[in-house]
Image (cartoon, rainbow, N blue to C red; front, side, top):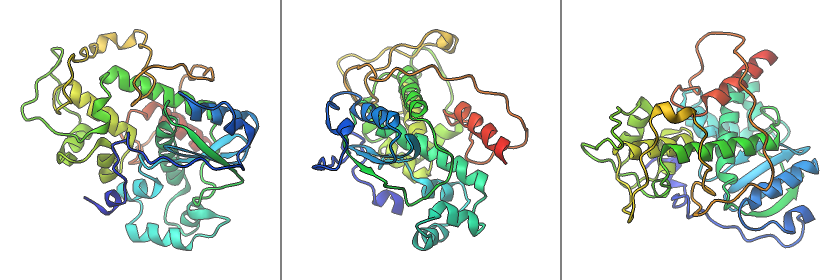
Length: 335
């Protein structure tokens, strides 16, 4: 187990530590009437409508706001910015530690890395946006509950990428939940240790070789690591790892907990264009629940304005490639 993994809680996702709700100090829109499914998402929507600035803490992480838009998100389930920068070779562990200990409060860690020439601004922004959406997925799980809102609180990373509308982040979390459901509608694989199966059988008549990313997951699966711990070990997206684990379960390459009735095999690729089924309440929640805030459909991704090789963080195996290409095009337009 690596040093990054050693600092993790028992990250079976279901066992996330619960904070004790703060007494006082939270605005009425967080304290009153925010319970049940999608409680954190509802609290976030109200803060966004009020153009609030600060940090909303919850049972699965925290979201930082500036004038109602999201500038950072963090969760114990999602590898942070430092892990990602080290995993793709942009920083060494010593360089990341030096940035954290010496960065000023005004510029933050991100500004320090750019000012010292450790990381190019475009690379830093892409890695930060990847980390933001990854952490926000877990923070906005339907069973995630808000604990408190701290006005004026900022992240130690400082300003990095531009603010992202809260509705866009909530819409992306909803899309990811549906993607997991389509891949393999059996969420027990998200929480327990990943146990590879030798000579796995193809389910649904779909014999398909694992992708390079899935092979990396299988190589890191030692029978005790959960998908989230594998993500920290590899320094990659926790959501992408959850998705790979579900797809490996769908083709019989990993063991799955025994149930009285197995889920149906995923639809063949030709059926992907049909409307997706309504996702369950959460990746880890037992029953569906409607989102409290209507989410408009995601816009079509614009064409890239420039060619060239993509940075290491834009792996073709990442399930958020379409989203990241849109972000990359927007960043290129600003450079």
